Figure 1: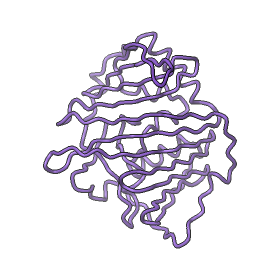
Figure 2 (figure 1 turned 135 degrees about the vertical axis):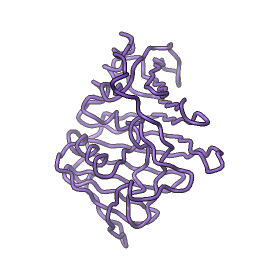
Figure 3 (figure 1 turned 30 degrees about the vertical axis):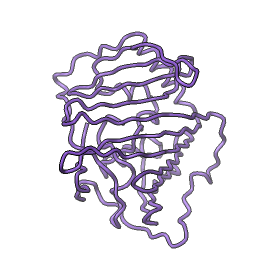
Length: 271
C-alpha cells in the first residue's frame, strides 16, 4: 500500500490536532484498460520468496523513509521518518514512528486499534470487527481513508499485495549492499508509478530498499524506504501490544480524513 491510497503517517486523524502529511493526487488507472501483467519469471520468483518469508508468524523490522511534498510555491520538502514495526500474526501489531513531524504510535491488540501522538499526548481508538492485521488495515482505509506506509508487506500475501495494479516487472541486475548481494527489481503501475525494490539474493528475499517514483506528478516526487534490520527471532507477549495511556494523555475522537482540511501544501492523494 505504499503505492496505494493515501501515503500518510498515522496522524491527521485525531480531532484534537494530530497532523499527518498527505501527498498530491495521483489518478488511478481505469481497470478496463489495464493489460495482463507482464512479470518476468525471475521477478515473480523473487517476490514469491519474499511473500513466504513475510508470512512468518512473528517478526520485527526497522524502516527509514523519506517523502517529498510540494509547498504551495512548488518547492519540494523532504520529510524523514524512522519506524519500528513488530507483529504477531494473525492479529497483533505495533508501529512506532519518529520523524520530522513528531512521534506517533499505532497499537493493535486484535480487537482495537489505538493511534497515539506523543507530541500532542492524545490518542484515539478504532474498533476492528475483523480481528486480523489485514482487517485492521481495511477498517482504517474504509472508515478513515488512511494507510500507513509499507502495509503491502504486512498482508497475508505480501507478494500479491505488492503487485496490485502493477502491469510489468523485471529484475534489473544484482547489486552489493553492505557486502551482501541483492536483486534490484523494477515494476510499473499505470498511470505513471515506478517501483524499485531491492530484495536479498537468497531464500528469504527480504526487502532492503524501496523507491516509488510518481512520473505523472509535477516535479516527479518519490518515496524512499530503507530496511536496515529484520529480526525473526523475537517472542513478543500480548502485553507488548496493549496500549497504556501515558500520564496526562487525552482520549479524543477519530475523524475521517475527508472531513479535515489537509495541511497547507499537502493535499489528499490516492493511487
